[in-house]
Amino acid sequence: MPLEPASGSIITTRALNKVYPAGVHAVIDLDMDIRTGEIYGFLGPNGAGKSTTIGMLTTRVTPTSGEAVVGGVDIIRHPALAKQVIGVVPQTNTLDRAMTVYENLFFHGRYFGMGSKEAKAEAQAMLHTVRLADRADASVMALSGGMAQRLMVGRAILHKPQILFLDEPTAGLDPQSRLALWEILKQLRGEGQTIFLTTHHMEEADLLCDRVAIMDHGRILALDTPAGLKRGVGAETIVRVQATGDLDKLATHLADTIDAADARVVDGTIVLMASGRGLLPRIIDAAEQLGSEVTDLSVSEPTLETVFINLTGKELRE
Image: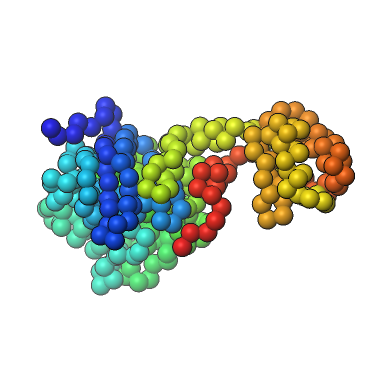
């Protein structure tokens, strides 16, 4: 029996798996429901299974088992048809360097079956959407990184796909280019475009995404709104403490004394996750009880980076 998408969902997967020939189980029993019109953030460390998941959803990787429907199309049974309902912006620049900015858009439209008149009109309209109308006749070789990325977004949505996949779209961009692309993505979302976004930029996920999934070791560990994920840390405040003495012993003492949700030593600094009033004087008093002197205190709110590190760990991934 064909998989029935969940109500209001434009992407639905059930028990989706990918096992590579070497025995690596990259994605494990993935159940996913992405809602129409949302920006869905997909976070995870290197090797978490993100690229394999995107590869399956965009038909580049064949699932080992399970089911997936994207834009109403069964991607396993009808991969060619699925390509019609998706737009993909990869990490690498795939623009045709022999063509102008306008031609990259125009011929993309023609490739997807538009007549010449329609492709011309859509290409000209898209130039304005991605803020490149003044560069229409320029060679793509003359574009900055930010301009090229905006053009790839414009090309990917020219044929009006139901879902736009963006793989780390602002990696390597300067702050101005990143902000310009964010504004375009917000505009697209406002027009009803569903966007599947992978990023290592936590601020980007926090600002843009309606919901964020965090994946590691082939499984989704958490899924919620950015605010919901941060609330899930179990603390209103993150306090970083630098002090003299045995920091591990002090961290344990502080956790017990101020009833912290978590206390650990990271790079010579005690990181406390706690709630309540009067935290700072209580921390200083608790340190003095052990004969330690607090040399520095800083206070911040939980961030998506906090959530990410708590779920996936601090060690580097190759």
